[in-house]
Image (cartoon, rainbow, N blue to C red; front, side, top):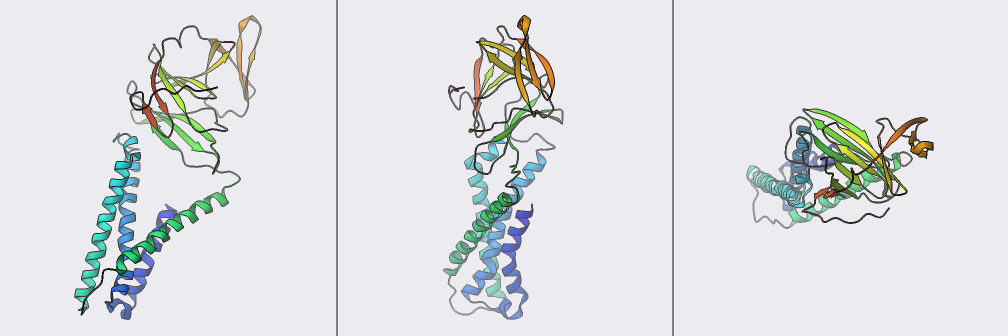
Amino acid sequence: MFEIIITCLFLAALPVLLFSIPKTRRMTGSWITAWKTVPLGCLVTFLIPTLVYETVKIMRHFFELLPVQYFRQWPFQFGLAGFGLVFGILTIISFSRWIWRKYHAEGKRSWLPFPVVFFVFAIGTVVLSILFLLFHLIMNVADYRDQWEMFELPMEKKVQIAFEQCGLHPFLAEYNYRFRFKRDGKTEYRNLQTNTGGRTYFNVYRLKDGRLYFVDKDSRYIVDPAKEEILYVHEENKRFWAVPYPQEKITSWGWNKEESGKMIFEFNNSRIEAKALSDELDGKVYYGCITNDFYSAKEKKEHPISK
């Protein structure tokens, strides 16, 4: 929100100044008119997509609107940006003609200065965005945390499941992961293993009992939408073990195979006995994958994951 306010002030400052001074307010030259109107058009171009996007984000907390994937697609983003640009241009033309009528401009008017000034403020806005990014990096370089990014999966047994990731480094591919379960307006989060290096790539499978099976290069999870339960799956000597994944933040963890065939999952000085899986993972069907979003099996084919 701070960045939005600063950007709006940057675009509105010059027109407000020129309109507040009586001498420049009455001037009708092409260049001075461009400096008075084009920044306002840029402001409209910026505000319309921003307000629509922020409104959708707020509304999605209360209502189940279109899946968030629709808002990340290029046609929607380009369409929204084009919509803002059209209204921005109409704002520039309308204000310019209003100025020329009100102050009785004489002689021919040139529209050439208007795209030049528009380009200047467009570059200025891009530079401002880069400065915002650098400011955040400098202020949070020791404890960098990006915003949580959400990838929604299709509804499962009246439960909306979403995979979420949060960048831990401004340049390297390091992420915190979690699942979000949303049912009847109630939201629950379950933290997952941290990815300490490598781009996000999960294959998702449907098990024969209806649960979902998530696999990436480091971890495996069985997700039960009905119970909102996550089982962490461990492989050792071609045998698979599953344990309820703790809800608390894990600072230390490991596996220990004890006598009598028991497998113990150790975390934060606690111990949980894992259950040996028999045929639960047999017959799994490829459901989709998670990269920069969730893609169904029809959208992206299965890509083998190397451990």
